[in-house]
Length: 114
Length: 113
Image (cartoon, rainbow over all chains, first blue to last red; front, top):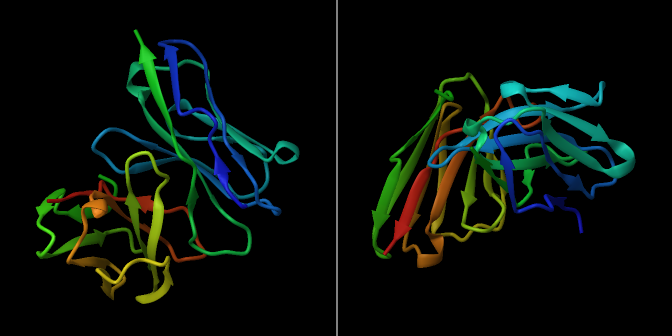
């Protein structure tokens, strides 16, 4: 079945440490790819997106993500995590050939230790 | 300020009540979306409107009735809801259905008694 998988439900990192959140998708053609962040009590904020071109994309708040076609992955990274990064992170795709159907992963909750 | 405003932020209603959720976007977009976010489940797309026309109904029960009077406003009319309908309802907009990304509001937290 076509899906978006975020294998890690919870991740805890120390402040200042590096971060990588995993995302895999199972669609044949390369979809549009997104990462969103949701802080408690708020909606989703777009961190970055990939449509085509350079496979390393830069986003807001110091985040970046790398698209790897061979692994069907779009992992989110940050070199040094800040306490304010604690939130829930969602990977999402719009499958190729569809319009508007944003399909979300289950989300990864990030906890940051002081 | 996301450019997408949802009201009310919180709503508590009984199963026999009728209420409406409102979404307004100030981004000049032409596509608007309703999503349901339940605990421990991925966000679920409910409805899509593109240039005021409904283009997607993701098998949503008829107790949820969307309305899109213009490209800036989207409503979700609620009636005879069930306890399992308690969730965060998120509205989003995009330039049009083919033009992503989507920008989200802060949601309405709905509790059904």
